[in-house]
Amino acid sequence: MKKLIAFFAIILIIGVSFFSYCRNSPSVNNSQSDITSQDVWNSNNLELSLKIDVSGLKSNEGQPLILPIETKEIPQRPDDPLSLPQTDPLHWFDSEYVAWNVEKINIPTSPKNGAIGKKVVMIVAGDHPYWTAVGIGAKKIADVYNMDYKMLSANYDLNLQNQIIDRIISENPDMILLVAIDAKASVQQAKKINQAGIPFIMFNTIPDTEAFKYSLAFTGPDDWGQFRMLARAFADKLGKKGGVAYLTHIPGGSPYYSRMMGPISELAGYAPEIKTLDVQSPGFDAVKSEQVVTDWITRFKGDLTGIVCADDSAQILGAIGACKKANRKDIIIVAAGNSKIGMTAVNNGEVYAITYQSAEADGAIPVKLAADWFNGKKIPTIAYLPKRLITKEDVQKYMPAQW
Image 1 (cartoon, rainbow, N blue to C red):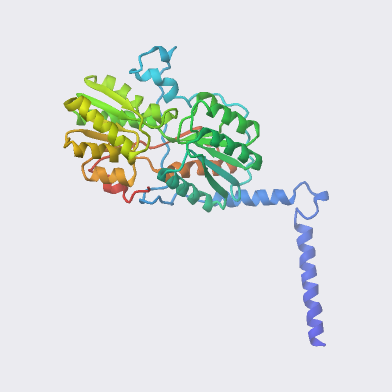
Image 2 (cartoon, rainbow, N blue to C red):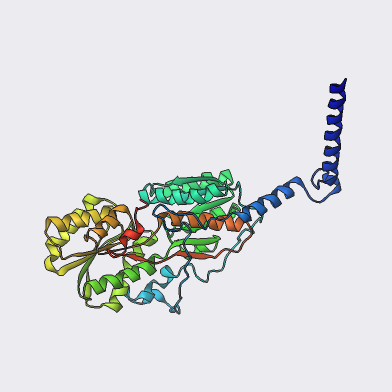
């Protein structure tokens, strides 16, 4: 009997508690309130999302994962930049400053309902250790926000990237993060995503001006800026004279121009006695790069005093190999960075300087901007990674390498 009385007492307590909850909950009776259960979820999601702090996260080498964002001083645009010589930095105005002062079109409004649980798809250029590290950095941020995140690779194939974009649009994610393989093709890609009503951020490689009009933001390295910085350090090391040859990035993408014409146009003004001897595009292939540099050494002999590489892995392996075989210790090599191969070469004195480009930060920052946008925060339309050079004096600071 006592057990039966206790049982009914428990039932009574539960019933009273439930009645009290229903009476005070704004989401139970939608017919009597403008606040729905979705509103409550959005409010809670936003509140929890805003409390998340990723500032303490580190990349593999111990540097902050979210690096300080840099801006850029913009010179006056010439009336017709392309009428200027290619060796004039202002000839490249619409490439270097492409994202600035662009009027946006049909930009979605932030839902302001929090970043937790959002479906985010990152589409990168291809399969490469750098992109693996980019994905690691992106996932670190996505995991903190418990996002439904995935990264897809286009394998440096524009047709494949277009197919991936079509498929992802059909899945209707909350955000797309896109690395454009080809600047001109990026316009149609951007329009297609925008017309589908999906917000997106472009990162790493600079798209065409028109593409910027449809994207929330761009984040990535200031490739032009850091290669101008690298060119000046390179010129000083060369004594502002000699002959330089270039191993380029893949033709068509923005790094092809920034890592070739950035230093060429900078040297034209800073060190006009340095001559451009040749430009070749062997891709990211060590054997082909070595063949090209071997040919340069044979053709230009002592006139070849410097080599600029768009990649500090396969390309510098080829350049270093050719110089060793020819016993040319006098040739100064610089490159984009900063892989394990590149930093080891800098530490060994085989490469003079490389640029610092945190692959993990390159992936993390667009995800963080996406989270800020979901949270209703104002995000910068352009967020550059900081410009730094790595030489033998400070290379240990950036080890172990991210890729």
